[in-house]
Amino acid sequence: MSENTPLNVLIVGSGGREHALANACVKSPLAARVIAAPGNPGISADCDCFKVAADDIDGLVALAVEQKIDFVIVGPEVPLALGLVDALQEKGILAYGPKADGGRLEASKIFTKKLLLKHKIPTGAAAAFDKVDAAIDYLETASYPIVVKADGLAAGKGVIIAKDHDEAVSTVRDMIEGAAFGESGKEVLIEECLYGEETSIHVIVSGNDYVILPTSQDHKQIFEGDKGPNTGGMGAYSPADLIDDDLMARIEEEIVKPSVAGIAAEGIDFRGTLFIGIMITEEGPKVLEYNTRFGDPETQVLLTRLKTDPMEIMLAAAKGELGRLDVTVKDQYAMVVVLASDGYPGTYPKGETITFPKAVGENEVIFHAGTRFNEAGDVVTNGGRVLGVTALGADLKTAADKAYALCDQIRFKSKYLRRDIGAKELNRQR
Ligand code: AMP
Ligand code: GLY
Image (cartoon, rainbow, N blue to C red; front, side, top):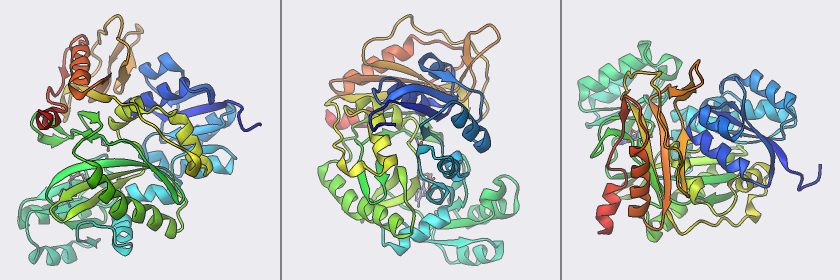
């Protein structure tokens, strides 16, 4: 195949992030045919979807072979940690996303903390335990609040900020001895509580090369004013002016460069997204966590703002050619507002019919996340986060107004949204 022959692409996953990835790839001249597994109704409007689950490694490899796929883009963390990219490579199929060794940077908080400390990357002090008694001894002399983290993947639920000794001890017991966290809680990390504004950056990594994507800001809590329990993310905007040029320069020097170098020094040939959670403390930026995939809903705004073809970036990273790429960004703001099912992140109803507007404006997209077709072929709700309503505008206010106007035209019975996505930034700009 010549260097420029368009590729058959498989997108793995079924959320809003994957809808944004599929949407970018179907527009790319680098793609011949795009398919998704398992996808969702929104993705199925862009490309064919196949009923193979995102954690079915054998099924996904078989699908890729059968459909003559040249390039696989892996959305979520679970297949990465399970070695999907390793398995595809064995079949000679190129993929975007780290192999299982790189996937550990998200799948094991203890592995990551050791790497951060070894390579002197700023992060909170911490200690790891697999025995309750030793952890309790440590907690006797600790200061509170303190952060207790299940080592493994816990779908965003493995971090507890314990306000006092009693809560820390019961959390440690629950994780190590209880069933709630399964295997992921058999070991725990007890970490110093950091204070400041929380932010994150997306870095496309390919071995020793990297490109920092535009800044974005998620809104993790379910309620307005950043209150209530954490969710996967209720909305995001880009750029996030909280990270000004000086802070970005500092983050690049103190966090990005040593992270990329440290990961490579550990023998990990990381080709994918390193999405770094950061606390801006009084002492400077410190790493909270690494994710080894794009954020959801951050991807919806990031890809919308890229001038450079996102597929070109991911392909270059997968091939080890990222060093040659110049990534450019539109001089516009983007916002995504998540429409959720009332009750999320707890229990919520499913199966409610969704009414969509007849048409959406230019530079507006409704990304699907928790949706499915019912027997009648209507799109109904099927998850906590249902849709990601995304708009571009000349400034943040315009993007917000367009996104919220579109949100108001979408109806389902238990629709819940935060009305204050980007509000802090808008107040700062005033
Ligand atoms: P993580 O999965 O490690 O990012 O943790 C989830 C969330 O818990 C983060 O987004 C923070 O809001 C919070 N968190 C994690 N570690 C700390 C820490 N050391 N101090 C304060 N908050 C933390
Ligand atoms: N929006 C946060 C995440 O994807 O982990």
